[in-house]
Length: 308
Image (cartoon, rainbow, N blue to C red; front, side):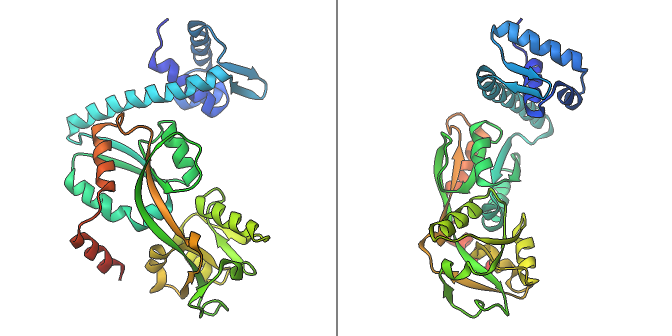
């Protein structure tokens, strides 16, 4: 038996879903056919790929290795299908990109607008993810390009500089810290916080710094977007920390104040990551090159005017 895309796709689905029944439902195929394909795959490769129990299915060490390889193969095959389909419809290119909320709210709208104007036949699929998911997804070929906040990441990826942002404190206008020009992070830890994703780089950074100070964040609630965070801060549910340029978008509409964080770590670097630049499709290389290219003085003036 030669390896075929359907068997690999069913194998990936079974591991992702945890059971043959769930994978069969996802792939619209009977469970017995899925089970037969998996058995044939193990026979063809002469190794056990899955451990079956009444609790579900878990991959063996060999199964984990095949999972990564299969995702890469299926990703490449999907690219063949998508790009050929897009040639027939005139799109001629498809790029999957994951980025964190900081990049999406501060930089990508204007930059992707310029990219689409320059390359109207390339389609960009963008999803917001937390930084840890972004690096893992790019390493596993789930996404072509990632943009995340630079920090510790265990994935073996190629990294390129992208941009920088500054974290600031937002408060209700009647808050004790609202009238200060700047604060130390330690001054904020006696108050309730409205935080973001538990696994996001910003949350991890703030929790780590608080721990180093011998304290902990008093998280009253966690939300998944900057607008929800600002609305909750305005409602008096706590204070929050987010990038300055993102906070500016809400200053005129909401009764909140922005206070400078007098901390060196408040300045953060955003980076682009890819699994291998040389292995990227031409469309993905165009996008990486576009994002790495600094905007012109005229574009910077336009961006500054929009922010003000």
